[in-house]
Length: 211
Image (cartoon, rainbow, N blue to C red):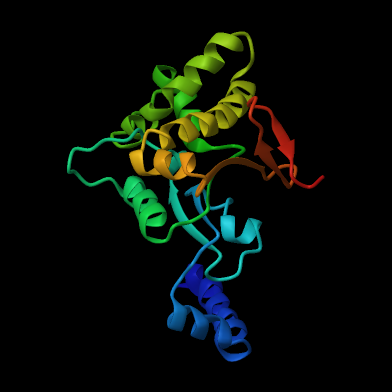
């Protein structure tokens, strides 16, 4: 398994650094449990690792990753909803003070959404999943109809973060925590071409966090 050799070697370095040289980190997490600073809803994209991007220590962030960092609308139908379950656990049980929706550049899920019927590929799972972000696509198509596809995708990547933040407020326990001042919702956008992390402002604009 040569493809996995680097991952196995990486684990050995991780074990040396976190269990042999600094055992107190995980000993404390075992004894006291986790109390993360934030829930991060990020993309499954292999180029976008929120723990790596934020240089987080084990226990710092509770992470859920899915295609295109989507927060689906709240649905109370008794069926399985993985992302919604992670949101519920982090807010009700871990009582995180922050939720961060982290979008990113060159997102394949967003591109599939923007291409839509113009693509000759069909996705039995991706297309229904990405339908939650149609409001972002529609805004971009309306406001930037003459822009090329790459530009539209970049705009949609950022707009979709806003849609996910709106969807979060549709979860009753999230809205309750926000209105009580116990929870703050944040929108971030990682541009890995520039190596820059941006924060969404109230007006929908994005400000670089490196400043």
